[in-house]
Amino acid sequence: MTTENHEVQLYAKRVAPVPRSIKGAFRTFKTTVLWIGFAVYFLLPWLPWSRNDAPAQAVLFDIPGRRYMMFDFVVYPQDIFWLSMLLFIAAVVLFFATSLVGRAFCGYFCFQTLWTDAYIWIEHFLQGERPARLKLAREATYLAAGVLREHVCTFICPYGRFQSAMYDPETLTAHYDRKRGEGASGRMAARAGLRTLDERHAKGHGDCIDCSLCVQVCPVGIDIRDGLQPTCISCGLCVDACNAIMDKMAYPRGLVRYDSETNLNKPMPAKPFLDWKRLKVIGYGVSIVLMTAYLFYDIQHRHSFEHSIQQIRSPLYVVLSDGNIRNRYQIRLTNISGAPETYSIEARGIPAGALDVGNFQQVAVRNGKSVIIQASVELTPQSADSIGEFEFVIRNGKGEVVVDPVRFFTRKNG
Picture 1 (tube, one colour):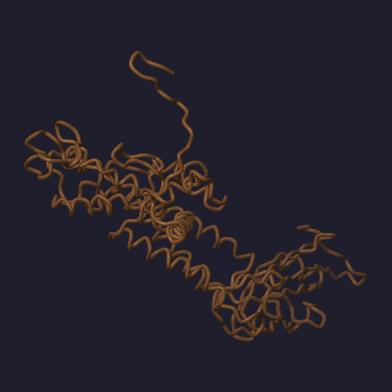
Picture 2: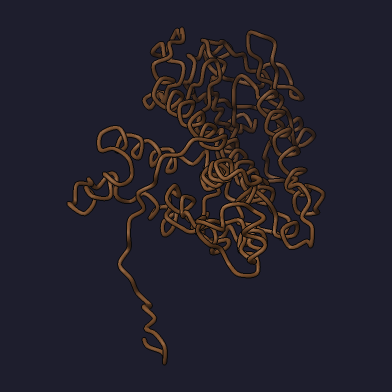
């Protein structure tokens, strides 16, 4: 595509970013998160934990036993509701953080970012600083594991696609202070007659000396001076780079900083701050608190066993030769207490001796296992017509009790 003055290239070959090393507060924080994350990822599976019925491992997926164990906490497939709640809480926490500080999660905590950071560190250790790596990059020395990098953030990760819906003008993210950096005459390199702020301001130039260090340190290869971009992961390395240059030039820090569009657009920007007094942010916060509280409440009040009682419906009832009526039930017990347990099954609301569970008045169940008990209830026609409903009572050895009402079917209600 061409215009009268110049040619505009709509499609260009991707140039892989080769970040330069930088020191600063945000780089230190990123490195700290990286080491903590890798320590948890690689060392936690080796942490021992004493168990009676499983390997001595603190975090364990027990596939044969169909359970997930984290220290003394055991989760079974029937606890899938907890996973749903946890995913919901994680999503809202992400929305909450994005509304406040943009894609800071991407910049510091996303494992794609951590892996990319690790590869860059290895390349720096083996191949040298940015100029040496640029030379080697032209000779095709990168393996596939080190190639994807920012492609994940730019094209694969859905978070980068819908993040704009969660941004507000009050959201803190990495910004270039264009008014201060450009001035009336634009940015200009520091040279004779343009080194001090007074000299630069007298000629209309801004504080940016066009060193491009903020571009060189960016892991996704963008120029923060072009404004907010969807590929920016708010890692803050451009802030560290610019502050380092400002210190060398004896200029005030903060030309590139975490700030909001609202504050930057003020005639005299104030000190950046987290603006949490917004309806959306408060709504996210309340949702996180309520759902987290409910999740912990549900975990704390979980029974040490699970049960289900189903009426056997083929047929609903049987009329015996003596005129009595029999209903049959299937009782399923699952022990999730963490140790072997014994359960007793009783019936409430029917005459004594009407319940028949064979030899299963006392049922021993191993931890993580289930048993199915066939129970039958036999009533005289008179008792059956007057009862209609009764209750199964299940107790364990620790005194925990559950009561489950069931119906008794007859000719009249069947």
